[in-house]
Amino acid sequence: MSDLTDLLTTMHELNRWIVVAAAAFALGVVAADWARRRPRGQLGRTALLAFLGTLCAQLMLGVLIVVGSSGDAEPFEGNESTLIWHAAGGVFALIFATIAVLAARRHGVGRSATIWTALAALSVGLPMITMPAAAVVGVVRFLTTRRTSAPPREVAGGAPGG
Image 1 (cartoon, helix red, strand yellow):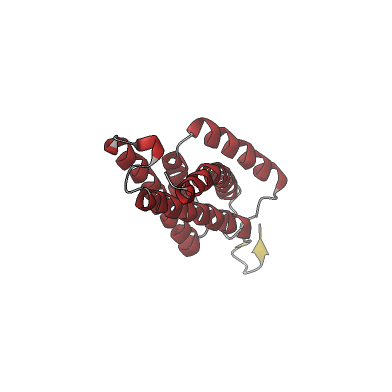
Image 2 (cartoon, rainbow, N blue to C red):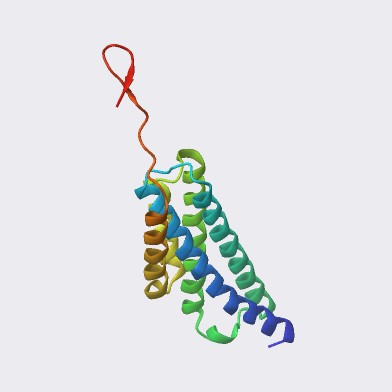
């Protein structure tokens, strides 16, 4: 392997942990915002975009490693089926995260964005780390934000009540 491929592989390995942290943070924030009925929260959309950005970087590093090593990337030498499944997991995570960002943009951070973010986080792998960390972030976010109340309803006399 060349020095460039070694560098790319190291960057890919380090970025994996950034992706896991971004996945846990995004899932925790999005789930808490959905539970608190805060669909327009800026932090949720920002967390989703950060998760999507780290996934894009991870996928591009993986492509560069495969191209630079002519398909004989060190952990997958001679085992093409493992390489294909590894790449498919990254592509699925990227697709699911993209759908989550689009759902949050269209409908706000709600059930749809939360489900797609959870699927993306599971596709990243390492669910034993991602899911508990997301739960901690979600609980902290849930407990530290105020619940938005529903708009006042109009009563028969036309005056707002509630």
